[in-house]
Length: 309
Image (cartoon, rainbow, N blue to C red; front, side, top):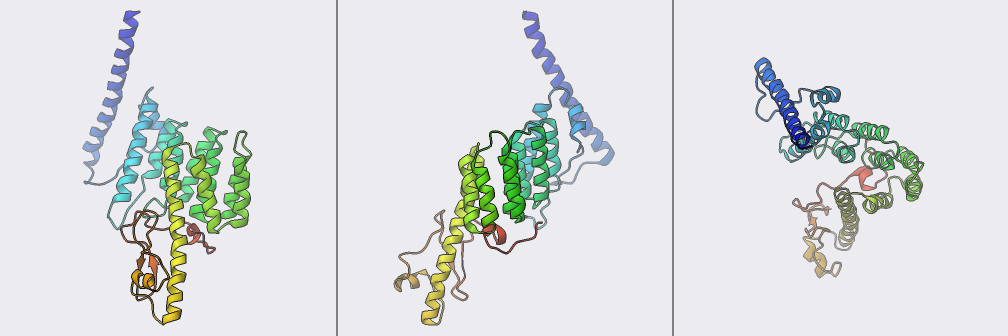
């Protein structure tokens, strides 16, 4: 018995050493043949999940974690980059490999779809690939209605196709064990697609049903953005009323406070002051507000649709 206890960790260590050695050998061979990549270049030499699975021996969950970490780092680096030509080319291949190695990697499907769908330059601007990834997750786990809910969100928020969004919410509602409110969400989407109230209900449902903190926080952030848009609309009405009365736009928020139209300088939900342009009367967020950039067009709950990227 003692021999087995010693032998199993030893075998694991030898196998892991072999695995790491295989990847190191592959990298050294690549460097000899192709040369080292330029600093800062993002490269992915193996794009096939099946190929990586064969190389990873019996450690596919561990390798899936490594690829997921690389996908998150890659997305974060691109998002924070100040380059005017951001490229997210490797994001989907990294997510595809991750989920091929571990088809039950729920976080990779759900978070990865947001990374893909998020509008450029904050994300890849590829809602089509987000849908492909989520459909892959649903094929691997046909009882997980949340994947279908997420596809509905992609069509609603990033594509602006409300009928298609409602269709996916309905499909999710058909899954045994799905919550009753998915059917209601489909009905609201059909009736109020493009309306900010419909967008608010959508994000409230995700916030209240999210199964992890990141998704809850993301939904709460979107709701704060919608709140900010509502306030901007009200402030714009006040500014317009002042101009109609005086013939000119207010010079500052203090001007409106002195006129009795505001109680104090208005702040957005994060505590940053709204900005007023005295030349045009335009109201917006401060440049350093965490809510930037605000959604526009269909995402903002306006009826005009934006073409998908």
